[in-house]
Length: 478
Image (cartoon, rainbow, N blue to C red; front, top):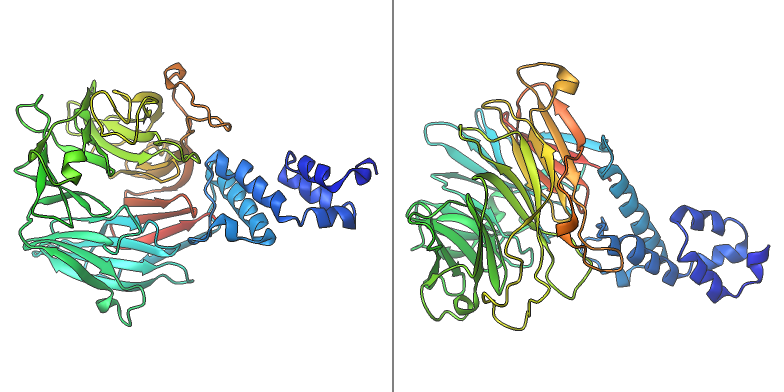
């Protein structure tokens, strides 16, 4: 065989340009070739070039570094990542396992919120269930979903709950912020507690803060007071708060979502996208009011939005921000389309300097990438979510292909957002992209309107669906 006379280092170089299946075939040719394909450097290089640099998540790492994996583990990681990506982006992804379990709340109940806990391993799902009695009790539960039967490891039932937010930073001991009549409490979770009643514990109590929770990131809280006015404060110094105010409006507009970093905050209100500099706030100095250093007004009022950093393998700058938007109509229901925007990073931004009108982290306006048909019947239940790796999922009423003209029915659909960088890391000019309608993947359908909420972990290939009957369905794709 001609290849057998080539030096090993040349064969290794050739293998790095082959597909995974080609390498599997190559190793079956002879013992020498099989030994070459056992070299760790080959699989580590392939994992970076075919998976990591393509912004494809690697499942089942559970916090392990790629550099610590052996050859067999690297090969398995590539296989799992590519198989999940192929399944996840197909026209009709089929789960390899479907599990439905009850939250076991007393009386009729509804699952009104769910979150996969970020950065805390593969196995935790947080749920909020409402029992619509006279006292309107809420039950917060944390589930271990790693076994055959999900197991509740933390549980707390509250009357008078006025909201909660999960910490987007998985490294902080405070897992969630809970707003009750007495104020805001920061809760941690003892994942090894002997009973579920002992699972939640208080990390910090902010007794004098009685505002509505918006965002919880690391040690920073974004809260709402006096209807639509916004406060930003830290857990280290909760008595110092700054108001985020746009002087353009006589009355503040509602905030729908936000991304908060050490240097800036990106806010999405119903009519504007605003960027704030947080230099004086982090120093706990200066005015108690911050005005945006950049603001963009939307053409129409926004009904719902999800923000998430765009996945990127680059470590030399800010990632762009994905926006999944549903506009509102003049009537009390949203319009029948979703829109994918990207807020590009400003190439002139200097991260070593404070954010100012002349040193903006992002361009002044988002760019429309695509529009997606997503019809909703009048008064029908719907939801949408945006994963960490650019997976958008939503529940709508587009069931005509499955149930004809039925008056009820829901579709679980989704799409994988494309990144705005090439494999070599060169930035694509988003202004050259043309907005278009795009066919979505259909993950599931049901004949009634029983789904209420959705959560996604696109790194591990998991979807959770909460229902009006107090049950949760887990769809697992790997």
